[in-house]
Amino acid sequence: MCSAGGPADIEIEEGVQGKSYICNTCGEKFTTVGKHPMCPSCQSEDVTPA
Ligand SMILES: [Zn+2]
Image (cartoon, rainbow, N blue to C red; front, side, top):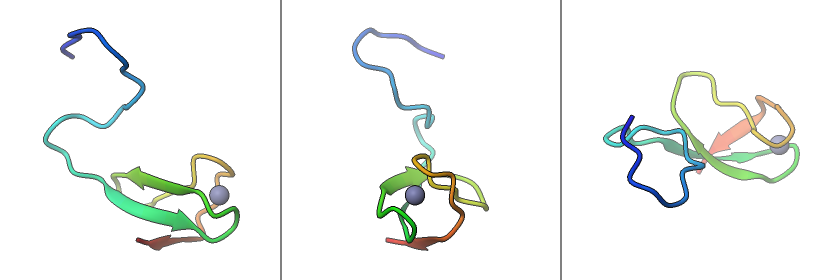
């Protein structure tokens, strides 16, 4: 990890492009990597690729 200062609340590593999803349960828009996207807000797996 390279900490250059500044906000660092994003856990996605540089060079890894996440996919955008919209939660069908709460409407949360989020970006994640991995084969099983889960809403960070309500932990629902009922999501749609955006
Ligand atoms: Zn949700």
